[in-house]
Image 1: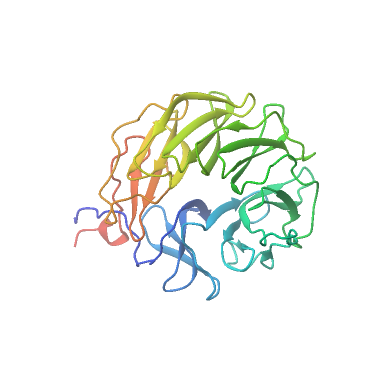
Image 2: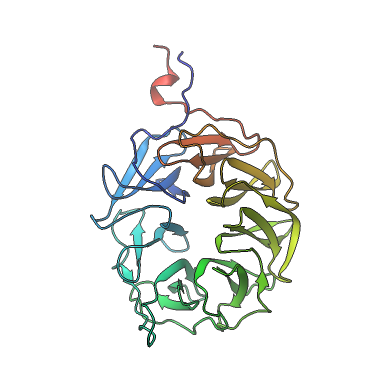
Length: 348
């Protein structure tokens, strides 16, 4: 029997992406990333054997790249991929039905009016959200510091604007549920400030806190130790853990030689873990910030640009990628997890 080969995409996606997304397609775990060839859009790879499952073609204007932020809206009958793309005067939100491969609705363009004497504001962050009535909405962050709520189908206003945002560009948004069951929105801006809002009222919860010395590029909510926590990653080369209820930091600050290019949270062997893409792929205890194992390097481009985790059978697979290569690791041990290709299941 041939030995298993390293997990890698079967064709060269030719892109520079700042994000991977774990999902389930056809009952099987998959990893989605933006691609520029052979189509412009998104490609989904089987998380078990690395085969190309499906391509979601968009149009020639799709640019991909590190500013393409992806989210999965799995609350409806069919999962929807929501991605913010930087093309156009004010940015574009693309929504793709992952079952049919078709657009879930027309692209949502920014509709904010130009302030007097200022440049046009641009959409800079997006996160999908579903209300108690099941209505699908988008929460849009803007370069002028505002956060709007719009209907995901029509693009029209669907509730009160988030207040008290200041004027710094919103770099990242994350929706989560508080301990009392209320829907919350966390937002971080170019000044490094972290804010929390009540989604139902649009009012700010507590005062903003200084999370980083510079823009906060990644914001990830997760459950650990029976409560909801937030992880923030900044361009100041650090990652921090926060209690969103008290807006106080927890554990140690995780410092890296490069910016935070990717961030995800998952559970492996009963332990909550944070995975950070920076100069290398790092793992940390998601409660204390203490390192878990040794960092992983060896990417051809000398940097891990994106990371995500997805359950494969009874194990958690951790994926890291540079501009070309997609690699898989065991989320519990950090060891390389080769792919068992279909033809490797028999003696040749």
